[in-house]
Length: 320
Image (cartoon, rainbow, N blue to C red; front, side, top):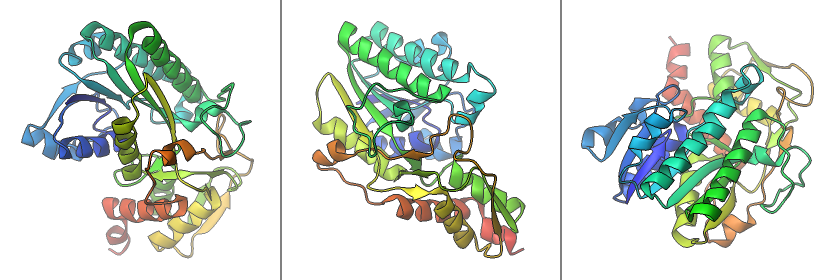
């Protein structure tokens, strides 16, 4: 199979490429490298098993030529900073909605029949039952990022109905793990790197969500795609439980060795405008396929904290 991975030099994309190449696929990476890291995929590029197309998914003229000869698209690229949408309000429109249109329209022009789309739990909004099943509706997102993901789902499902493509829509929990470049664990580690005596936590620390390790996430994607063959396939991907931001802060303080750091909360029930204080996905549909995660939330958090600390050399730096 010849696969196109948008955002392939990024956190989730690079792990997916490891799996695709490991099973013998040929990979084309479409990435503008604004937040991706070539080091994550350099070995695959050097081997010739992956090819980089440096382009911007918001530009149709960059996307359309990259689609030639592709069998399946894994559309992962999006705005990585949800909070940015509160300041630059067309960020998610451009990098989410318009970019997804560019992908599916290019697929139509080149007769590419299959797409896997990285959506998010934030499409459900904040009034959904917990754990939230795939059939919950109406979905009423409260962030511009969530709105762009819901719009992307709608575009893709309309191309399934109108042009006969096959789609896999995956609504992710919070995905964490090695090579992480943003998110709460990444932010906490870098705050402690800057000031080991103090850790600021946005909100009251009682925000509670489910976390999924990135290897589990990409394995779940490929597993579902191998056994589900409906025209439109919608799956939540997450873990069995949740963890609070307060607990994440405690784990990061412990794993960094900054035991004397004071954890200070800014207050309020959410970290930023559009943040959802409590979220947990129902994963029964994923489990029914025979797939289960290796890590639950707290295990994934500790694994991620240790990995990111090693990746940035924090212990060595603090001991010099």
